[in-house]
Image (cartoon, rainbow, N blue to C red; front, side, top):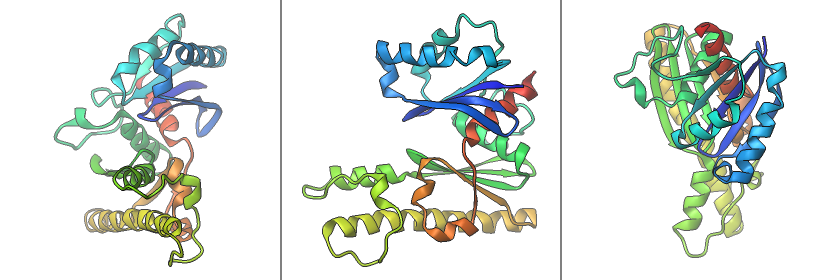
Amino acid sequence: MKILCIDVGNTHIHYGLVEGINVTDIGDFRTRAVETPSAAEELKIALRSLLPQSQGIAYCSVVPALNPILKAALKESSLPLYQLTSDDCPGLPIVYPNPNEIGQDRLANALAAQAHHGLPAVVIDMGTAVSFDIVSSQGYEGGIIAPGIGLMTRYLHEQTALLPQLEEAELIAPKSPIGKSTLEAMRLGVAIGFSGMVDALLERVITELMAREKKAPIVLATGGSTANLTADWVKKAQFVDNLTLKGLAVAFQRAR
């Protein structure tokens, strides 16, 4: 069964056809751009082109203002439409004081971890923000939210008079930990600092889960900034593409 899955995030709208763990026909739009009529029409055309291959539609959104645009794009479809929310998260107990605070994309990631990788699990999603989501034998426990690498570079640029804006592509694999120019020093500070931040947070979470669950958690990393992690991260996590979309498909099938 192919499910058209759509993740409406703060920066991008990401979509694809999901069948099991396979994701095809992947595309994305910049979220802010879709607020314009022309881009909204392009999104509608792109999504509708995938409907003939789909048996259902599942989506999650952390931008409620865009939900009407998405629903308008899909309104002529007769396919079942499902939105993942904390009130409708089939098969995943939520052990969290205020479930409605949890981003729907984070629940999708947790569902994908539970269904395809096993528990306990730590999911690290590296986008605009870096989110850690912890799924134990009890269910979804909560997590951590930290600044993403893009926010780090933007803050350095915006809060100083002379430091330039860095692009994420400039921050991959520094050759030396000692910068020989302002630009190199910035690159090192963000590139090595980003990995160090994620590393320190993960260490604390693993220690907690080991004490409670009596075994090491599976660590999954996803999102656009995984390429900015230092090389040793290959041994620390499984890198999984399109995890949120896979989780949406799990939720859709469980909800039927």
